[in-house]
Amino acid sequence: MKKITPDPPIDTVDKNVEHYMPLTSNDYNIPALLVDTQAPLDALHEAAAHRIRAATQLLENIASHDNLQSNPALLQDFAQLCVIPLRDGCDLLDVLGRRLQEQLLT
Image 1 (spheres, one colour):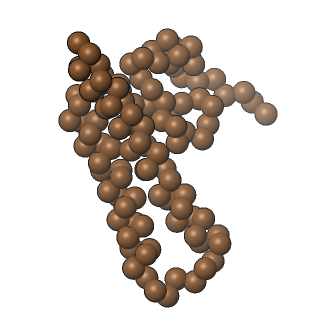
Image 2 (image 1 turned 180 degrees about the vertical axis):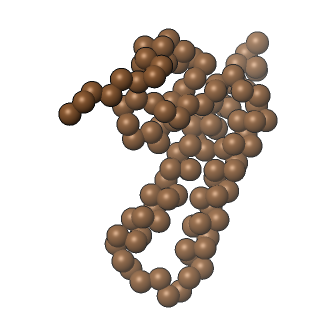
Image 3 (image 1 turned 90 degrees about the horizontal axis):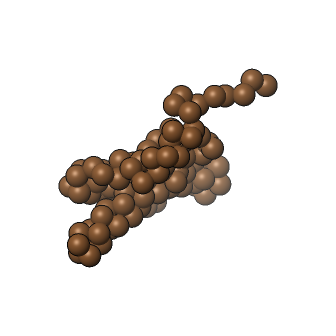
């Protein structure tokens, strides 16, 4: 199997860990989705809120259906659909929290 070479090289991303943080929902060892930790606070908040609201809406829709059969594969798919944006939202909130703490300490 051919080895995949990242573009940019992985060490370029590692040098910028403080500025760009990989999302924890990445399921591959080369991060493709990154959070700009220096983005404006309102942009970080809106991105987090959007992802959390989307997952919440899906969960509310699932919860309101009385006739959902307990199909384990279907329930696992729904759970995965919620996990990804919730993790992304939590990552964004973590960055937002760290940035707000830095502001309080300076």
